[in-house]
Length: 152
Image (cartoon, rainbow, N blue to C red):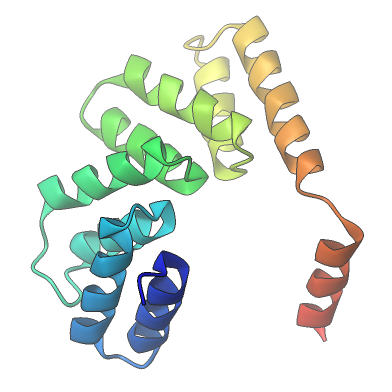
């Protein structure tokens, strides 16, 4: 009954069905139990105003909670939020962490920063190596088979 993964999955199913109120309820329960993915999904709901009123503060709060929980995309999005608020140093720190977690999108952001002289060659190279290590760590024959099955 207190399974955060099951609650998140139920919330995502309700979301896909267009039932945003139930989606928010299930996803919120999952987040209260500490699920980083649920916090990330709540941040998306608050950004879009689906099932809740748009609320930037709540969006950022849930991004922060998801990032603390190790969610790569949340870390990347926090970097984007910092960049949009003129805090490029903080953005780069978030993006470097996101790269070490295997987030692909963050590499483009770091590449732009590197070209602009905002990231050192050493930091950029370290982020690339860490990203590759993270990606390699997620590879397995089972995952590759699942990817192939989804393509069919």
